[in-house]
Image (cartoon, rainbow, N blue to C red; front, side, top):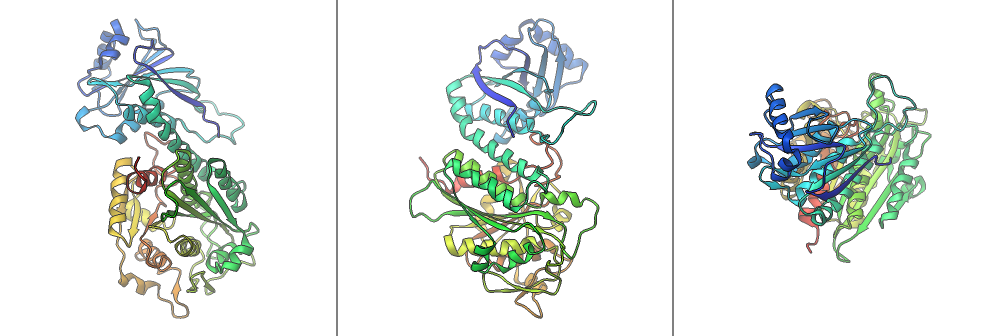
Length: 500
């Protein structure tokens, strides 16, 4: 989807045009360049702040139309709160708050990237610009007309006035690619299932070749030869054939072990023979949020030319209930050789991941694997929609994911694993059954996956509550959030990428 918001950087001394956005702290103080731009209008801001009880708290705004003494159509003041408490992710949110005050038809916007203590650092200004783009995203490609009062997608030429234009542009370059990856993931999650079926999803993933990513697509014949009976068992009920897509970015040293990310890509999930209730089944077009994240992540890493070897793998299926669909009671043989008794055909995502995890572990022998999946409703019962569930067999990997989650705002919460839970998925007729019942549903799902990672360091992220339909935020107003792209990009950048 074309990006209708253009973001550029200009010197702090540039005269504002169109709409002017400025920042203040919780004492209503402004930076020197901001005060100069305001001129005699500074007193107007003070009066308006008093009238509107605006105190400069974080993410609060003050909107003044046709401000007297300024040659701009609107003046938007965004509160940054206490400067001492600002973190990197706060600047991203400030950009989102600013974009949230803009309306369709806002042609020209000037944002003065300055706080009372001086011009924002290049990284901070770049984060504001990224926040603007993330907030401005809107998926409306299938709208042929707008209802009265319905807000159209924002289209604007936004200039950030900064202290060092060259440094800000340099800092924003990788951020822009990360944003592109997030928006690509959002697009995939938001697409309707009659458009984004497994073969089409695989085709879109193959477009990463333009960025230098090696893409291999395994069709049904290839997966059958590999013995991917768990994944194929899910796919067999649909007229749309399944696919597995392997994406490789080789930006690190030749021969270095890669890191690997695996995504669940159930393009639509009816539940199969264990069919879901009709209410809200349309949301199951988003059951490929994990796969969407992996594609977005690979886009971000390749576009910014990450100095790391990375494997992205996604299993793509539809879970449908036709006469050829697998049944409760069926036993399938996974690529690992382990047999699986199907108790509930709606516990399908773990079957898809089982074969893809095993394939990646054995073929690429990665330093670690992280899988992402909209796997269980139980994780929303436990954590709501603010945190993704984290399960891991490796404390270091879990700690790193937790740390970068706090830094990016894509937070994860570690949940337990243990042999006691394995008893719940032991099968009377096969090596394992695909569900352990109602109690501890997210945990038994993770225990199931752990049987297919061998001894590879591994983490499982259950993103059922965060990838789709999550509460809207300062940087996301979309049903599909693109959750995980920024989290995992930061994980690679901070811990697994060769330093310059």
